[in-house]
Image 1 (cartoon, rainbow, N blue to C red):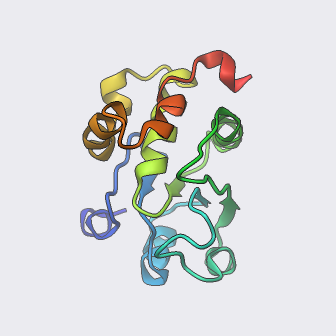
Image 2 (cartoon, rainbow, N blue to C red):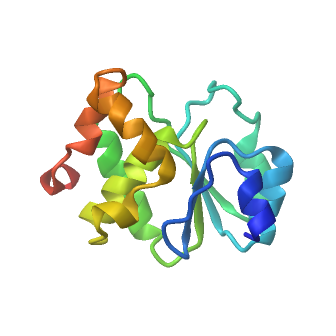
Length: 158
């Protein structure tokens, strides 16, 4: 995406040339995502997350991209969700993928673990600005349910 387009997506972060992450794109932003060469949109938000886009899968497919919805309950993420996410990302390793949720919190944790466990990225390279801020809230107990994801060992992905 161009610099202007990336700044229009909530909490946009691109840890690699083929992976972009963000909060919920609007229908117009999904058009920008397609024009920017993304081939797949992976949505980790629940179907009723605020501000979910009704018929997002239909809209994304109509723009010529693949759509994968793997809803992760914000209050109850599990390593099984992380395992499924990593399997999906492994299949999409050669594709240009936008992964989003409501604000990019879920995604930042999942991408961090995917990049460090599956792709060998350093902690710094895999940590988005949002995760850097959010991690202190997780560790202080405010979002302690996410510690299971941040602490997940590689064996949890098997």
